[in-house]
Amino acid sequence: MYRKRHVILFIFLTFLIASAAAHIAQEQKGVLTPDNANEARLNRLQPPEQMENQMNAAGYRLERIETFLEANRMYIYVFRIDTK
Image (cartoon, rainbow, N blue to C red; front, side):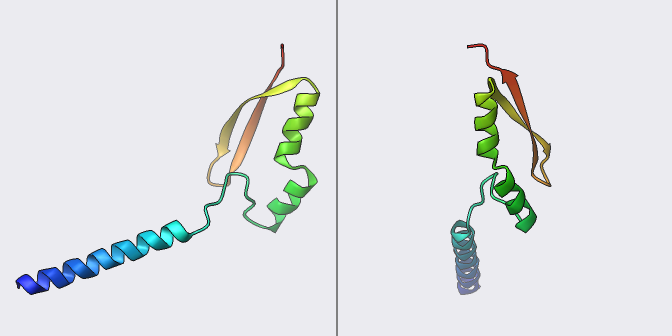
C-alpha cells in the first residue's frame, strides 16, 4: 500500500511537471498579434501603432483602451484632445 502511494504520487508529479513545461513552451501571443489571415491583412492596411501616431500628429493623445468584446479581442481606443 505504501509503495503504491509513492508510484501514484510520482506519476502525478511527473504529469504536473510535463504539463507545466508544455504550457511555458507555448508561444505567448500579445494583444495585437493577429489570430487569422484577415486580422493580419487589416493590421497591414492600418497598423494600430500607425493609428496612434497619426492621432498624435493631429493633436490627440491616447487616453485609454477599453475592452469591447474580449472573446473576439475587439477594443475601443479612446483619444482626447492634447492640451499641452
